[in-house]
Amino acid sequence: MSGALVSRLPGRLRLRDKELRRHLRAGTLQAEMGGWDGVVSVEANPVTGSILLHYDVARLRPTEIEDRVERRLRTLLGDVRPPERTEAEAADPAFWPVNRYAKFGMLGSLTATLLGLAVNKRFHAASGGLYLAFLLVHLANYRKQLLR
Image 1 (tube, one colour):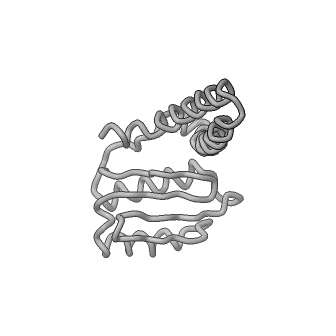
Image 2 (tube, rainbow, N blue to C red):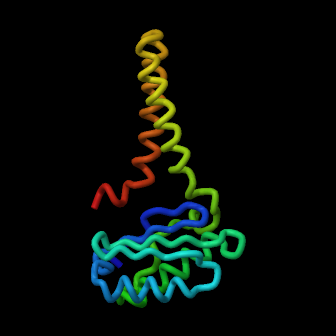
Image 3 (tube, rainbow, N blue to C red):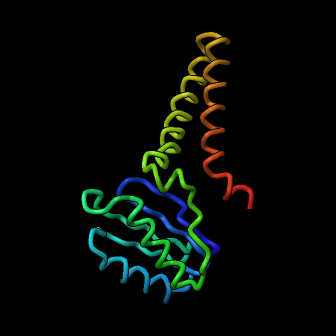
């Protein structure tokens, strides 16, 4: 599959693929996934080639819905490659929220960096270094998309 699962949070998945820009495929997936047990809502956007799926975390485990979505996309889009998920992601559901914390860390340390400029230079430099560390974590999570 040329596209993939591009965002995952508890209760929410975003898929993106250039083939989903076809109205028929996006509409087919939206109707089908909307009928799955535990799925709350599905929004297809053929303009961007993405699908946003909300599901009930009390009824579905994240890995369960991700595997089902990946299988369905491969079937619909005609791809037989295995899903591009590491063993750590499949085994440990706590792995994928790391990027969320990195984003909050970047926001907080950037604020501290800007405020630290007025306080003193050492604090400004330290919080800037912290921002860079969070940025590296964020970029490492998106390395496959960045290095296409």
